[in-house]
Amino acid sequence: MKYIDLKPIAEKFNIEGAVLSAAPTGNGHINDTYLVVTDSAKYILQRINTHVFRSPDQLMHNIKAVTEFMRSPLQVITTRDGGLFTVTQGGHWRMMTCIENSYSCEQVDDPEQFCEIGRAYGSFIHELAGFPARNLFETIEGFHDTRRRFEQLMRACEADPVERKKTALEEVRFACEREKDTDVLNDCVRRGEIPVRVTHNDTKINNVLLDRDTGKAVCVIDLDTVMPGLAINDFGDAIRSGASTGREDEDDSGQVRLDVDLYRSYAEGFLAGCPDMTEKEIELMPVGARLMTLECGIRFLTDYIEGDHYFKTDYPEHNLVRCRAQFRLVQEMEEHL
Ligand code: ADP
Ligand code: GN1
Ligand code: MG
Image 1: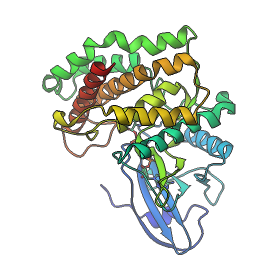
Image 2: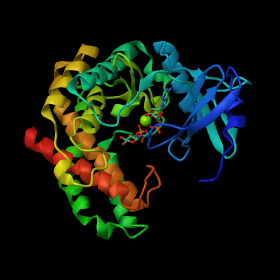
Image 3: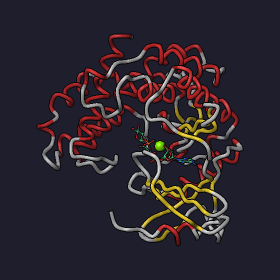
Image 4: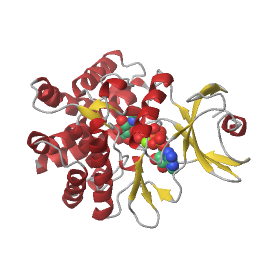
């Protein structure tokens, strides 16, 4: 990657003190995240991925509105001329408060920790129940429209721009065998059986920060996809990322199991945080877990076939390996359903 001098970028924002250092932090798949340390405070500087988020203006409008409404410790730091981001050195940059003495986890350590993450994501929805959804832009169209994700995979297979389809035939077949299922939640919404709420939509476990001393959740981060959505999808994506015994990119499928105790702990925390879930939503929680895992696998597979333009990857088959781990977990869930 091209060298970027982060100091002058950081200095465009309303920060306190002189910049001492700026270094990469975190493990997100989308934005480039840096920890900026000054002689009096710490900040999070991010280069927004504008291939994924086409309208940084709308994106930042959403984040500012939501963090202010929630009075979250995560707040947008404006630029010295009052903007929500700055365009410089070939990128769109934003700055957020750094949540100090906190950590995010890539894999769950124990059921209590997962329960706590569940409570945080559940309360997030609960707290936003009074937020006017019409004030939010749709930052990615059809983000959790699983049918649409399936159609995108079919188009990628048809175009096969980097001739990778032949190396993923089994995975494509796996997705096709489940095509019908991709309509299930869309149909429930159409029939008015479940409410559309303001949801997070990217409830991976590492998008909650936990206090290093107490282990309690401090706040939910990564608010790029806060939009109208389904609570069961927020439930489901956390199960996908936290209730598996393997890593998201585990290459030994034997390691990928659904940990039912972890599933239960998460459900308990989530329902405690969001006590207004309807009966139908509660009934559909396992369906959401399976569909979000299937959808995520489909997205990794699509990106693999298209040549890795969306998710950050460390090696050429990375997205395919991620897809396989998701599909393995889908099978596990099907056995448990
Ligand atoms: P991405 O969209 O790429 O996933 P995130 O906003 O989730 O980007 O940030 C990536 C990682 O950086 C997080 O998982 C977390 O570890 C760390 N991080 C992000 N924001 C903060 C913050 N405000 N305070 C402390 N750590 C943060
Ligand atoms: C991305 O940004 P991050 O790393 O928290 C993606 C999620 C996927 C996840 C899979 C905006 O999440 O939808 O589920 O990777 N975020 C976006 O790890 O596409
Ligand atoms: Mg993230």
